Image (cartoon, rainbow, N blue to C red; front, side, top):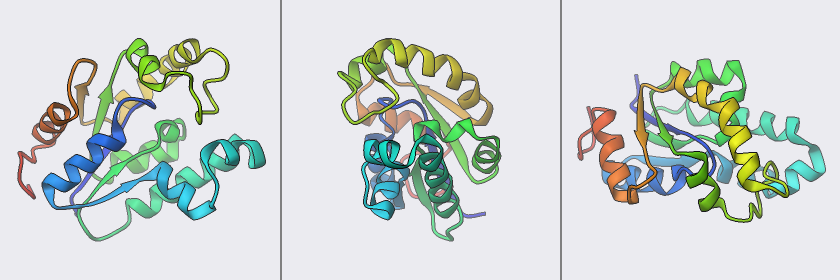
Length: 175
């Protein structure tokens, strides 16, 4: 099987930053599913939600995830935060590589996303919305993760170190 490192977690957990750094360190390709959805549709996440609704956005997430996990080159994938809401996506994640959950407390996540601009699910109360989303998604992330890295008090480079160690990738480019 092709080596794939898949990062899951809530918005604000650091998937994009950590994913880029991990891919660079490993010498692997990198794909951020939110960025890919925007590139493919020509729309930002808020625009997609407003114009086509959440279901259409989730369908785009799934399409991008399938593409990211079907290539034949080693890749680090930063999966969209809500991708675990679909059972089919959870099955795909669990069977397509090493999944590492970047776990953070809802208060940490709320602090990182601030006012929630550009994040349609956060509404007028980002901290409250983050707690609610976390309560729903936490068991779903746990169900697909081969490893968990708690990120609350860590710098991105420390998270990368722990992710690569948890995935058995050390600091080099392969298993």
